[in-house]
Length: 418
Ligand SMILES: Cc1ncc(COP(=O)(O)O)c(C=O)c1O
Image (tube, rainbow, N blue to C red; front, side, top):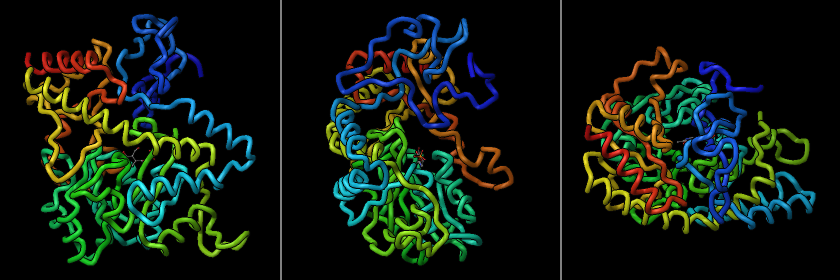
C-alpha cells in the first residue's frame, strides 16, 4: 500500500492497534530527525509508513522509545549464527531471567501477551460457561482473550486514583460461575493484591495477573507476577522492556507451567505426541535473545523513569491543574504509563495542544465495554466512564530530557487551565 490509507480502514497513526511506538532509536539516543519526515517537514507518516503530500509530520516527542543497543544486536547475531532459531536456548535464558526477576519458579514465553493470556486461562481450565472478572479500563485483549477461550468477561469498576480494579466492585460481580479475577497493574502500578486475593480465596477462584505493563513492579515488597496463580507480561515496544512482540507467563505452579508449554507447542508432550489441543504460540529465539538482554536493562530504565516521574510530578503540581499519577505507599510504580487527570471538559484541549506542539499523547485506554466487539454486554462502570473522559497519558519513555519533561508539563498545564 502506498500513501496514507483512509482514516476508517484501521490506520492508526499512534500505533494503538499494535501498541507500537513509531520509529526507533538506540541506547545511544534517538536517531536525529533528518530529511523528509523530520519534524516540520512532509514525509513518511508516523509508523514509518509512506506519507502523502501535506501529511502531518511525525511528532517530535514520542510516547515511547525503546532502549536497544549493541548488546541486542550481538544477541541476535549469536542466535542466527547458532542456527537454533526457535524455542531454544535463548528462550530458556529469557524465561529464566523473567522468572528470577519476578521471584517465580517458572517463566513460559509466548509469541505475544494476548496468546499468553489465552494460554493462562486454558491452563487453569477456564472455558465455556465460566466468567472471568476483568477491568474495562485496559487494553482490549485483557477481555477479548477471555472470549477466545469461550468464557465470558465480566467488567468491574476501578479505583479513581490508581485506575486499578476496585475490590468492592469485584465482590459485587462475583457469581457462582466466576472462575478467575484478573487484575491489570495499570501503567506499572500493582493492583490491590491482598484484598483481591482474599476475595478470591473466599470465593474459591483464581487470581491471574495481567502484568502486561508492570515488569519489575512490586506490591508490599513482592514482585507482580508472583502474587496470583500466574501472571502475564507483554513485550510490545511501548513497554519498559521489549522484544518487538512477545509475552511470558510466570508461575510457581510446576503442573501449570507444563500445561502452558504444551499449549504453546501443539499440545506435544513428546515429539509428535499430541496429548491436548495445542497451538503454535512459540516465541522465536531471535526475539527471546533480545528479551534476555532487555530484562538486564529493566532496573536502570525504571530507576530513570522514577526520577523523571518525581520531576514531572513536581512541575505539574507547581503549574496545576493536572493531577499526576497517584502512587500508593505500599507499592513501587514502574511508570510504563504516565497518565494524568484533567479538569472536567479540558482533556481534549490538552490532547490537541500537545499534538499541536509535536508531543504525542494518547488515551490509554478507551474502555473495553464501549467497543463494538462488546456491544450488548451491559456494564455499570461509573468510575471507568469518568476516568475515560478525563485522563490522558503523556510521553514517558526513559530517554526524555529534563527540558522535554518541562515542555510537556508547560504545554499540558496551560491547555488544562484555559
Ligand atoms: C494490560 C494489557 N493486557 C494485554 C496486552 C496484550 O499484550 P500483547 O500486545 O503483547 O498481545 C497489553 C498490551 O499490549 C496490555 O497493555
